[in-house]
Length: 383
Picture (cartoon, rainbow, N blue to C red):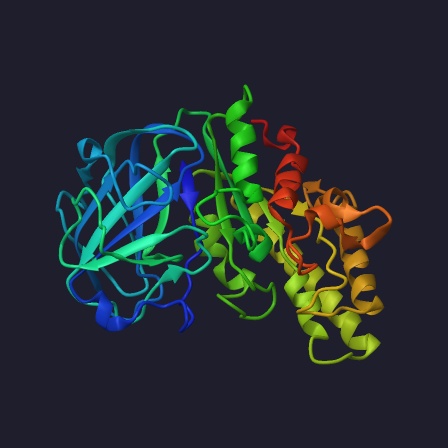
């Protein structure tokens, strides 16, 4: 079952590593697991690569801290791929390691370190990691620490971690944009709403065998490519291909709504068309998930009036209300999480409550993410 995942995309120019730094490079990255297990496997990704990518060695270990390159050397192990220590991942593909005995506690961190002899022709990664990664020249995959390494708050070439779970194990995929990705959460703090949900599941009597997979991309759209592929285009890779997924939370749409009028107001007909297309996209996601036996939970779109980026007007708010009404209507989604209700200001329901607002009137603060994670009914995830 999946215990950790991140949506892959082509890193934007400001988020990509300089190609010269990726020749003979060791990259160490730290990932926060949801459910635990005694055996795990790692997904390497070359999903957007245009040539085969050679990983000469890949190691896993327990990090000493969420914000340090230091590892517990006694825990360091070599990953193998069809029995070999190296692997060549074809262009556009993902490659899953052989299972390895490596007891990993729920809500613990895992360090994955790999070496590349030559740089990928096109990088694949997840810019919105909110976690620090480390890279240095040379093959130092088993080094106790990388004190002279460059630091960057992005992930590269790793898309998932699975654990061997009991027969009743399952995973939840959270499909979203920057509010799921964790914009304005604390770097290395693991305090996104999905992290809060994972912690609550682990503290419950029935949720300890449930993983939470954060498939949020900052700036993501349902209908158009923004930062990363549009939701419908990435659905197969980020939802259907995930290990053991049983539930899907769909929390998308604010970037489509805000983007409509970011450069000026448009006609009422264009507003109506956008709402129609968003609801059609939701229906497509539901159809495709149901075909694979996945239960789909709709999350209401949170307020963004006052946003410095989108500066929405009354028509945008009316669009949001219409879509949220559809999400809440029984018979559309299989169930509903009312994030709108959880974080809105009761006195000004088109605004985030100030205590839950990071300051840009679009993204929640860490306190807002906590409230969102606590607003998810655990009863949704009964077997």
